[in-house]
Image 1 (cartoon, rainbow, N blue to C red):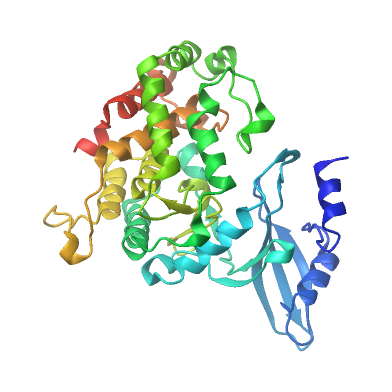
Image 2 (image 1 turned 180 degrees about the vertical axis):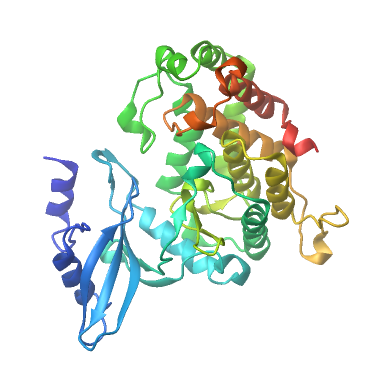
Length: 388
């Protein structure tokens, strides 16, 4: 029996939704009380997403009024491949994140508003940003811009300051925390190709030959890194901290796939399903890694880092605790988290569409050079962009 069939047998009250079944979506939204008088679902459109079912629903009244919303259903399998398990508690964590961030206005302003939730059916109803698109285009030569980078950094600054020291039982470490640990601190360092189904959305790491097809020499560089004792020890130590530390709410997957650009150029942040309690440095390091992978200009990366640290651009000082800044950020920790994310994306299963971002062939070696920088970041706590 398939994973989905087992789930449906155990939960006969849960309708597994799909964007191509507007009638079923209408039935479910009506059953949970999310439709107004004389309102019905007229169309549904998939918004993509590998792990959860995410769709835009258009709701129309008989008298002619209409609205849209985003409906998300997070079930215990990978949407892209239902044979791959996903943690069953991820709905709870994402709901808790939206509820908590609503109490931090500066951060909530950059996220969709949570309109309704239904635990029994694993459903969230969220504000719709019509016309928005995610920023995966950054990997293909797109530009984030300093203004957008600063806005994203300020989001993390607000999240850090607004939740620091307010740990909530809703964010007890769960399956998504353990999955993140496996994706970052274990999967990229095992034997290539093994255990793909155990690695959630990433799948198995490419073997040396496949990596060499991406960039000559990358396979050998990956093999050397995986056998580097000092590096493996530093990764393990960082992984132990990841599982046990944290003094504020973190998004957990703060990268271009979860950043949106609105038609007016503003940015928004979505999909906090990996969110929970952790180090502020984790989100900052993850974002810095992706900005480097996408080869964004140094000024853009620095604008993001300055805003995330709460640095006053004019005087270059980070505010102290009296001004609401709290303890300073740990640059070495940012570097370490950035390093493991770079490694995951270069030699692990979580490959990114970086082809258009490669240097010309005569100047090749972008990935190998960045992999070496990631090793230094993890082992020594140094990343060049953090030093200037």
